[in-house]
Length: 175
Image (cartoon, rainbow, N blue to C red; front, top):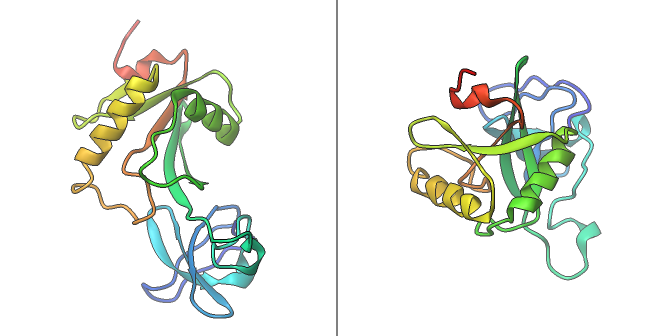
């Protein structure tokens, strides 16, 4: 997590805002790290961040083999705007999470209970997830669109759009 703002010099360096969560990719040298934030990848000084989850090759993960971390892009859609989060998980990009796992994780991430999970179809419409079959469909759709959407290599090919459960206006309904 960025503890201070950092203004990168040139294209290789990442701009950081205090409070942003950066997904770490690798250690460049003793003082610099490479990571991803807000769909941008670049390098930044380690002294500007507080490491929440160490890199897999770091000494603190010596329980035999490093973990790979994957990044899940999530959007919270509220009447006041959209909040974007990249959630770091230990699961591989090939996993298919259950609906209840995703719902529980998003309640935790956004600190809101009364939510609905959605994905965007190729036409740009939100589709509400209701069960594990819907999650399968979202993952299939995400993989189908993978070539058209530029994502970091460690990011899931699908994204979650979180809305308030009672907000049906996001689906184009006018009550």
